[in-house]
Length: 201
Image (tube, rainbow, N blue to C red):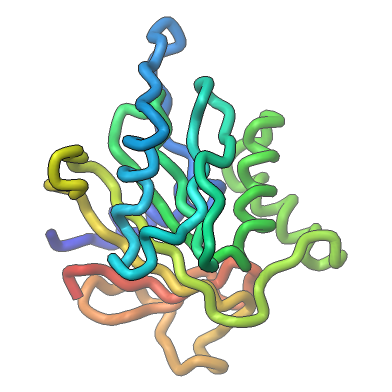
């Protein structure tokens, strides 16, 4: 699948704002899959050698993330939100957890859109919120259908991100111009600066 600039920007804006998926209508009660299914769904974006030992956050009740499995490596995976219209699973390095968790907490408090980053950036500047000093990976799958029999997602779009807080074109040699054919730097100079990759490159 060829990822266009609007598609790329739309995906990463949602994911970096706290990994929040679109919600179903309030009147609909989501069915929460078993912990085993959620774990299997959540680790699908990861390389196979990292899946078995990743920490998994998922749901026992709608809207509240809990730890479904404590991991043994440095990756954290989020199970798809049962209330979401479309499949979305994401896994990221544990160094990003303070930043990600703060985004989720702010959204739960009612903070919306760009204001989430306004708050987080200010907290990073003040030293209250930590961001990693080393490159940190995020793996995601958007859309498609999870097949429990195979443990795979069909029809989804993969997106890979390497967080490099405060990175710039000057410090990395990467362009900040969006591309689906080569890596590029998004949000340069900010706490959530990151290199964008796509399967279609």
